[in-house]
Amino acid sequence: MSVSGLIQEAKKAYENKEYRQAAELFQNVAEQQIFLGDPLMEAEMKNNCSVAWLQAGEPQKSLDVVLGTDQVFAEANDPRRQAMALGNQAAALEALGSLSEAMDKYQTAADIFKDIHEEDLRAYVLKNLSALQLRTGDQLQAIASMHTALENKKKLGLKEKFLKKFLRIPFKMLR
Image (cartoon, rainbow, N blue to C red; front, side):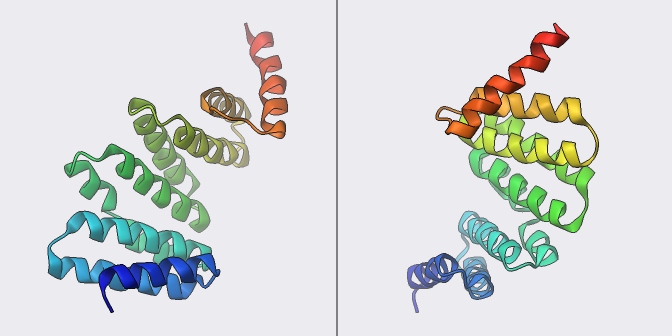
């Protein structure tokens, strides 16, 4: 089967919630890229594989496969995919219970997204960071992260609009 055929099969498996199969197919494509000499496609497929492994309940496999892909994207001057790779690493670390390390990765990803004006992706990462900060007892920082996430998001749902208004209260009190 061709590379594009394998990718389509992997995406279909993922959409059908067959996460293990999707991960294995993405891993297969990534390994083929080594021989084809395409490190960016290899790193992209490893990131897809990481997401699938995480969905399959295999956070260690998710982390193992995605480590180093952020550097591949950084060397290729692709900050968007670099930040996404850091976010994938953070999600795997969070699932493994390495919360401090996960928060560092989420923060770095958020900073990169800010630099390249990817507000929606930054908001998504900041929401994850905020949830972790709450879990670790840093409520004020969690509120600040969530506030920043909502301020940067272009389209807000009804719950997000309410939360954004609600979060203005503590900032008014702090001033």
